[in-house]
Image (cartoon, rainbow, N blue to C red):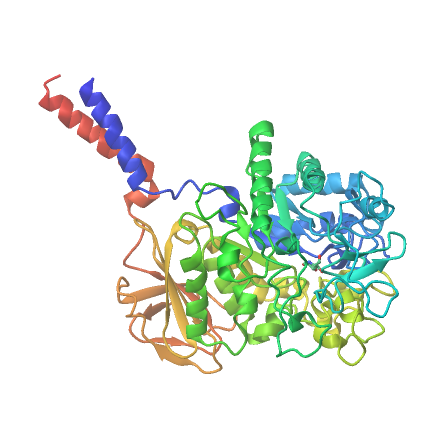
Length: 608
Ligand code: NOJ
């Protein structure tokens, strides 16, 4: 009996030595794809994308190797901020379709094995939401649903002055006077997006109900909008002025110490995480996840993962915006190496990294970094490890359409300014319709006018053309999404190193598994580099994938010591002398074998 016990213990220990490589949850290794519904696919010819359109195009996600998609808001909305101003959290915007269309979308996604994530916008509703209308009318149930303030006494008499100097993210004062209620209300975004009051527990509860409603409909989680704006200080003091931005209406004019990143934000996030976990416990099924949007410094961002004591969990995926905020087309190899390490170093132990390359609020990757670096950025996104997040169109290199006139401009962040400066603020260039093919409106819509103009470059730059080409950004993207399914990419650790001003590399290693090296040249010149700084590599490496313009092809052998890498090239190499052994192919079998041998040996010794 004692011997049997010993064998079981040995077996158990060996299992844990082998690591957690088979135990990743679905979301930890998935590629997430952001769909901007208004611009993805129009099914009824009104020039606006819709749910049926998305359903009809889900195959594309499957083909790209994507496992989940988060949809920008699809709920009832006056569309002042294109869905981020919600007037009913529980119904679908008419121009996007019906609840039946949504159910069909869920069903088709399920069939294809794609998980649907919805955008959850808790900080503010639309001013047309019933809650706001009732709050403005001082209905006792809703009186404190929003942030109301009398304002400051006006020394010249007349209506009170605004409570303080706070400005909206979208330019101008963050306060608007309500004639009806004779008070100011706060809005951190447009004046049609009043901020909800999260110090009112009824608000938290109502929003939790919203989450439960959509979970029951079959979604796998939420991307949580503008989460760090949820609370403001209760004494409403002025924010300090940043002299570098002299325009008092600009968001950059103030240091936002009192309107973002307040401690109370995290408590709400942890509560919602509990809600998601409880839902799984009660209803079964796979993990429901939360991805949080907060443009904030690293310490603040990391607290979304868990609290300082490590006793409460929060967001599964606190968006990593470093590739958007800290790097651009001028960044060097060292900048990249440093930025990648920065996230890895800050992240608490045991959590999952994520890499966001673009979204509907920021210039597209190809425009930020230069079209020649599209493949380099997609390579990083898909091989650095953890979650990769792609904004629709960036899998095949769509670029911003910058020539949108003032007349055609839709984005409130731009419309709130003036014809001289609007382009600096506009997010329309990255929101233009998806370029499927070279037919009318790039295959997006049959309408004569689309809600935003289609980028005329669609004639040459479109998904169909890239699918038909022998080598293309999209084909390379597909190759990478396949490659990242390798257990080394899913579980291995990472070492990153700048090798010259513009060339850097990272090694992905996992015990008893293949080793991979990703080499990226950000520069316009071909170079020769040595991979010797990575001490574990052998002399010869084999190419497993190369960017479409690379001189290399799959199977080519290269030397670790003097590797030639072309301009803007990205290649993925594997160490030919370090290949799978028995243990890596069947870790469990190997352990079983060892423990059975031990058992047999002990039995023999004991002369059973
Ligand atoms: C962040 C969203 O991504 C952006 O599009 C929106 O305008 C603001 N939050 C306000 O909801």
